[in-house]
Image (spheres, rainbow, N blue to C red):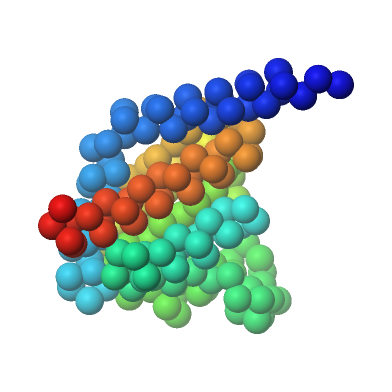
Length: 187
């Protein structure tokens, strides 16, 4: 089996997705500005995701705090997830966490490769009800997915492979972190 054609295609596809990021520079800038305004008012960023998207939410929430000096949280603790899933159902676990932890004026970031996850849809709806100042969605696959239509800023990737979507979502979010860091340092 010759893996070179696969790797060449795989790398070229990801490079193309990253290259398309220049088309969403206005959205990246707007999101960073919304987060900086919320942060200046003592608010935080709340991130949610499932599976690989949960790992992205964890990674990015740490970088918001450490790199960009923006308070951020995610709900990936096993005790919280299992308790809330057991008591409220998995489809409502994030929505209930948002009811307890999201304060009016916070920014919510929903990461969902497919944009079809009912618990992420419910999290977006709960964030709106709780008074989130801005909801950012990152999705892929179907352009008209239910998560995407609930955001104020919607970063969507026309792609059907989870790994490409997840890697691009992580790149976009870490770009926002770096942009905020740069703006805070006045570079």
